[in-house]
Amino acid sequence: MPLSREKKEKYIETLNTYLNTYSKLFMVTCDHVGSNQMQQIRGGLRGKGVVLMGKNTMMRKVLKAYLAENPGHPYEQILPLIKGNIGFVFTNGDLSELKTNITENKVPAPARSGTVAPNDVNVPAGPTGMDPGSTAFFQALNIPTKIAKGQVEIITELKLIVKGERCTPGQVVLLGKLNILPFSYGLVLRHVYDNGSMFDPKVLDMSQQDLENKFCDAASVVAALSLELGYPTLASLCHSISNSFQVLGAIGLEVDFKFPQLDALQ
Image 1 (cartoon, rainbow, N blue to C red):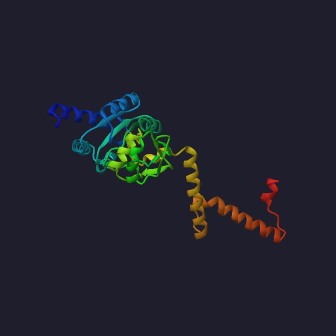
Image 2: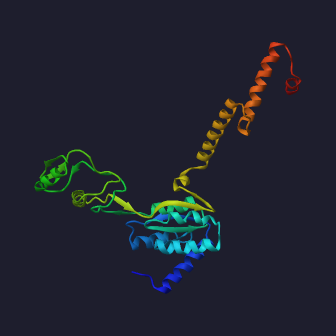
Image 3: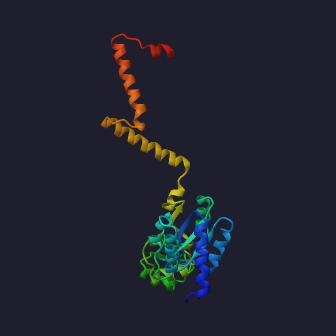
C-alpha cells in the first residue's frame, strides 16, 4: 500500500533526524518477522536504540539528499548496501550490548514449504505418536521406522533439512505432525556502522584479549619479515638490538674483552 504524502514527509523527517542524532547503526534484515514480534523488539531496545524500517527507494532517496547536503560523509558507504528487506537500528550506546539484545529476541517458527532453511533440522529417534497407517508417509521420505506399542517409531536420528536448502512439502508436513518448530526468526545483523567505519557484525564477538592476540601475531609476522629482509622497523628493532648484543657478547668472550656497560649493570 503506497504511503500518503504526509507519511512520506514524516518518514523523511524521522530518518534525517536519526542520521544527525546517532553515530552508530546496524543494518538488519527482518525476513519472516511479524508485526507483533517487531513491537516486542522495539520495546526491548527502548532506551538503547531505535528501529527504523522502510522501502529501499525511500531510504536511498533520503540518504542521497543527506549526502548532497553533506558531501564526503561516511554515510555514503551505506548507500550501496540498501538491498532486500533491509532496515536500520540506530544507537549511540554500546554496540556489543545492543547486538546481544537484538540477536536474543527470536521466536520459534514452523517450517514453510519453499522457504530457505536458516539452519539444519534433525528429527530425533523415538516414538512419533502416529498410528501404523502413517508408515507409507515415512517411507516416502526415506525415514527408517518400526512399529512399537501401536505407533510408528523412528529408529535413528535423521538430518531432515540441510541449512540453505528449500523446505519441501513432505518435510513441512512431517515437522507439523511431530509438533517441531525447527526455526527461529528475528532481526538478522548484516552490517555495522560506527563513526565512519563499516565492518562485519562478527567483529563485535571478539574480546579485548582476542584483539590483543591478533595484534601481537601480526607484529610478530612483521618483525620476522623485517629481520629476514634486513629492513629495520619498529616491530623488529628490539630483536635487532638483542641479536646484535648477542653477537657482541660472543665476540667479547672470544677475545676476552669486558664491556664497561655490563660491569655497570652488575
